[in-house]
Image (cartoon, rainbow, N blue to C red; front, side, top):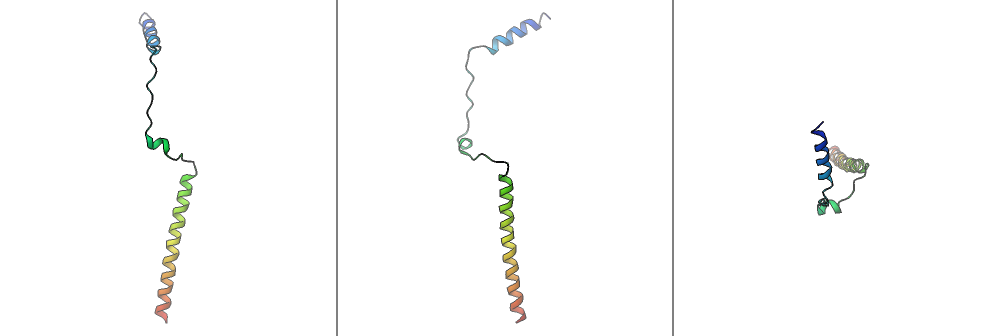
Length: 72
């Protein structure tokens, strides 16, 4: 108990030292970056799926053209 009171006083005095806290520097890129919304990842996945579907459709059309060219 004798040690607890001086430690409590010391911590209270150090907390109230009067010095302002050091400012936290933010990187310039973080300040100008886009704030991510919860659905941004879903939109990116949806766009990726659309791009893949375009590629698959193009490959299917190319394969169909090759098949028609071979049968003629």
